[in-house]
Length: 323
Image 1 (cartoon, rainbow, N blue to C red):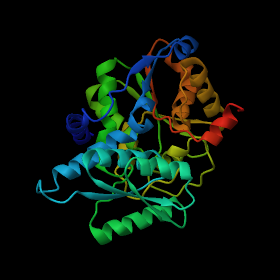
Image 2: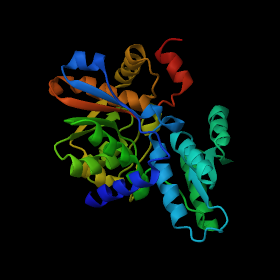
Image 3: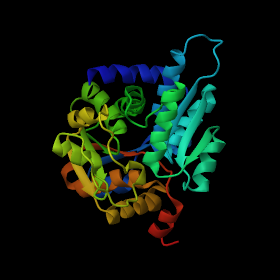
Image 4: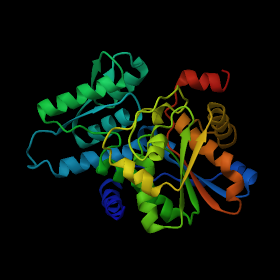
């Protein structure tokens, strides 16, 4: 963890001028209902609408620093993602003059494909699912030598996400931080920084009951295949990659594990929309729902809930709000 803490400080130096230092705003409604001082870390206000940009910038800038000659041809990277990671990599690459190639399942919605393409990336559509797209992207990386940029299985990506924890530590004296967990890059980065900078802070990992992959791996003490069901938190869904650097980090830094139902996620998203006037994605709703579920344990405490993104699925949103 100490090594990741140092990497976070390095990442902060590297990406500070390229990302938004998102606000930490007090939530009156959550504070009043819980008796805690509840603050929302507004990462949904980040460029491209999610925390993923921090890790993407740090990884790409690190690659660029180590690419060699200043007169070398533009760096080329490949990635695979239908959502936040793909948009973040595309955006960061466009700002840095890097050629980005994003592999997607052919059935990915045209809206998502256009969003990534408009951010400057080349799209390669493949037959099959997200795993197939990743396999093809990795194959291209091996064949061409272009670096593959993982959404979480990379220490530089994790350190970039950890700069969010640095901001939290600088903005408030916290007793707990609630974070939605997918591959573990965000909670691993935040937790690794805070466990050194503010060791009394409790790190609360939050999962949808329908998609608890990393939680089940932690419980089994090894990475295992975990069957999942559809969830509003689609950006945290999916299995955990064998050998990922985030597995041990999550085991070390997460102090409490909370799961929430789809109904609880939807209620949390509606609460944020009604009282804070923000539309957030399901993963952000997971963290809010987990805090609501545990609120009686945090009365009188200072708590941060990470609103990790705003890139919701419109059809899901319509059903949540009965539009």
